[in-house]
Length: 148
Image (cartoon, rainbow, N blue to C red; front, side, top):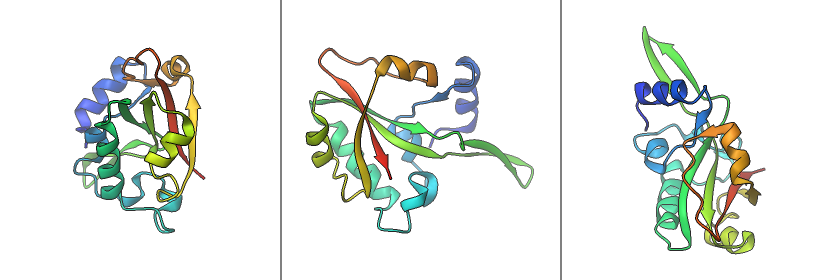
């Protein structure tokens, strides 16, 4: 999981826009099951470890340029026992791909994820909302895997 000071620095450098996190920045060491799709975590959604494994496998494909985790505005820095603590709230995986939405929904196992499917995003519009978006190669587009 991204280290607290690294997160603070990204926020500072990017006018407090939430960063799109790499899979490792979001998932590695993160054991909070409700840190992504919290409304579905007790209702059939796979575990956070299973979601991470699926996303890592997808990211290896040649028709997928990158995957990032969109953070929800509930992401915050809290204080616990006198120490600051980063609490990540993931909204959805953002997948940059040359696949169509139906192809991606099948490969991303949207039904298994208890997801509502793949929703296309305008990559340039993301820049006003988030920081740390990698370039989108020609012929690729971005989809959010959304939860109901």
